[in-house]
Structure formats: structure tokens, C-alpha cells
Length: 263
Length: 90
Image 1 (spheres, one colour):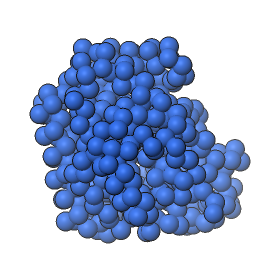
Image 2 (cartoon, helix red, strand yellow):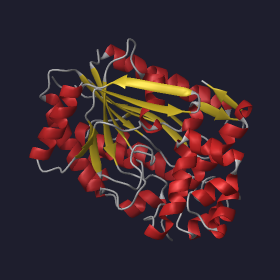
Image 3 (cartoon, each protein chain N blue to C red):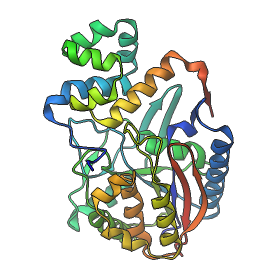
């Protein structure tokens, strides 16, 4: 069954637990964009949400840092503040991704017991179709160098698309993260919004696979280490023209909700 | 220009482990809030690192090998724990 939907969603936790320093109207506008993405997933009759996320040193601490990984349990849970999340995992699909991915030369790590990170549950909190569907968490290392190269992420996305298209489920492929932000850095209050706008223009023009030529250094300097999840998903959707649902720059973060046609 | 997210040196591991636990381990965070000095000493940190962490002094922590993101989120989680009423939950 061909991929049924593709989107990129932000996950900054201030959208879930809003500090006084976060503009409330901006947060509500991002929530409205999440709702549009959710309706899109429902209209596409999504059976499973595969979500590419960059772990924020939550499931994978320095005890073990995989470049690319697949969660292959029957369910997965995470917690943040007063929130507790448990999602069913589409185990046969997760296994197929892992096994076919490894056969094709991607040395994927896997886990059956991880604390789910907010890169996954914040977008799902707002955009999970109703009624809820099972998920497959797909990990791309973004915060612990050395991270996978953009070229490798794109190649993995391309292979992933072929695996998903051959499956019986209707799969939506989401990329969580971005755009520009610098948590913990001295540039926290000055994201590179120009980079974001130029990139969104490029994606709207259908030039997504050019992102495979970016360097890790460029991503870091632009506050876009998380863009690796987008590049992976761009590998999967090719040069389809992006539709920017919403781009909301806060004082510290470029929140983008973007969809791609996959028919 | 140096990178914002750099390889965490092995010498910084105990410090990063404490930051990770303040971020993600509710019981450790509660113990820390009740007894910061004792909790960090028990976790293997020396006086220099305990002082930097208690002050959440980012520049000093980074110089000691801390990962920038861990410093950020440990600080936010401590604020969420100590001033929960200052956040709006959706």
C-alpha cells in the first residue's frame, strides 16, 4: 500500500507545558496547525503512524547511542511533567522496517524497551488521529555527535519508502523536529529564521532531495541538527512539493507544520 | 565558529549523568531538591562540579564537558518542579 500521508511537525515542549515566557497566542496558532495535520491524517485513513524523531537523550543516554534505530516492542511509554503516554506499536511493521532495512545495508539498532522521548509524544498529543492508531518510533540521532550525515539520512528515507510502500498498512510518515533552535546554547534567543525561510522556499519548490548535500556542520550552525529527521522523510517523499501549513517563530524556536503530497 | 552540540568527553560523563537524571529521573530530582549537595556528592561529583551545577552556570558546565541540551532541560525540569503554577498545561 503506498504511503498515505507525509508531514513534518514541531515538538518543542513549551507547546505542551507553556512557561510564562512563551507567547500564548503563538502557542494556540501552532495547536491549530497541529489540528489541521491531524485532520489530514484522518482523511488519509491512516492505519499506522511512523514517526521519525531525534531522541533528546531520553531513551538513549551515553550508555548507547545508535545513529539510526527502530523501536520494536508491542507498546511504548513516556512521561513528562504530569503527562503519561502509552502508545500501541505496530510490531509487524516495525520488524519489517528493521529486517528489510538491515538487508539493504542499513545497520539499524533496535530496542524493545525505551522511555519514549517528547520528540514523539508532543506531536502525537496534538495530531494523533481519532480514534488512535498504532505507531512505529524511528530514531535518528541528532544531539550526540557524530550524528548520521544528511546523505545517509536521505538514503535511509528512500529505502524506508520502498519498505513502507510494500506493506499492507496505510502508513503516514511524520518527521518530528525543527526548525531552527539552539537549546542550551548561547544562541538560544537568536535562531536562524532566515535559514528556515530559505529552506521552506526550497521545499515548496520541490527541491527536497537537495538537502542530502547539506553538511552536519551547516545544520549545527543553523540550529537545525533536528533537520535530519526532515531529510530522512524527504528521502522518502522525493521532490514532492511541500505545503507549509504554518511557520510560527517564537523568540527561541521556528515552529513549522508542513505536509507533502504522496499520491 | 565552534559547534553548539559537541562530542561529550568521557571526563564529563559523571556530570552528564547527573544532568540526565535531573532531567529524566523524577526520584533523583526530588532527592536533589531536598538535598542538592549531598545528592550530587553521592552521585560522584566533586566540589567544583557541584557548585557549577547548583548554579546552573552554563559556561562553566560546558567547560567541564556538559552537553548543552542536558544543561538546558535539567534547568527547565527543575523550574517545572519548583514553580509548577507558573506553567500552563494543554
